[in-house]
Image 1: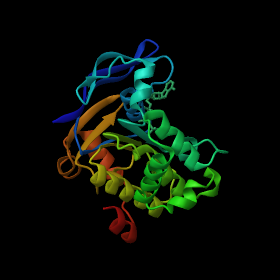
Image 2: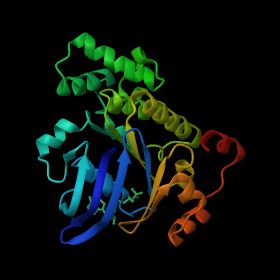
Image 3: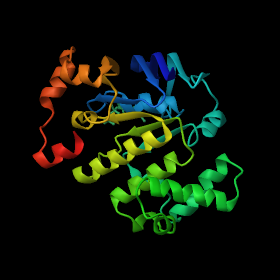
Length: 264
Ligand SMILES: Nc1ncnc2c1ncn2[C@@H]1O[C@H](COP(=O)(O)OP(=O)(O)OP(=O)(O)O)[C@@H](O)[C@H]1O
């Protein structure tokens, strides 16, 4: 059964369409990768799902359905209630997931508190569990300030915060782009493990085809605001139909042997 259905969505910026005719269907527990070059509309598509469209952009046509709910025109408050709980985001810019001078544990605690009526001990238990799930030393990270962690650790902490309330959908928008390739591979593996554990769907956004290879179930290719090809990973990567997909594939750099083992 479909968890997320985007049907013929058009997003306008001022009066011009910036994303058009977008159709996406993702099942519970599916890893759906949206790939395309910079500026093709991947992030805008992803932001529309959780009500995070930038100013002066709106859904001008089509529908978004999530978990049997029409999400197309929810209020700000309704989106706030969903984000962090039912739908979570992880971004490329992990620094901005946290306020700099507040300890990570406190920020996690506030997020849990905003979405539940659990006791302090119960909240702490959830935060610790999530930090362990992303393979971080829970106690230390809980008591750390964001600047006391490395980039890879901070990105994993932001994943912990995103998944601690067991969302049904995790939207990972270029989560590894700012990381070196070994750290990136580790972050991807962490996301894959989380997906197995909580059975959430992943909407993974990347411009790097190599990152789509290992974990994706379905791959959609976006170009200039439209999806030009969607299919199983095997079909899209090994038997691409659209000339743009073929071009993306031939442009993808090959990996050094060691990295190849890690991410393919
Ligand atoms: N806040 C904004 N205001 C106006 N236009 C924007 C804004 N954000 C993005 N755009 C435009 O919308 C289009 C799609 O951008 P989007 O960020 O979705 O692309 P993308 O495929 O995610 O690219 P990247 O891989 O570089 O993040 C681009 O033309 C971009 O310039």
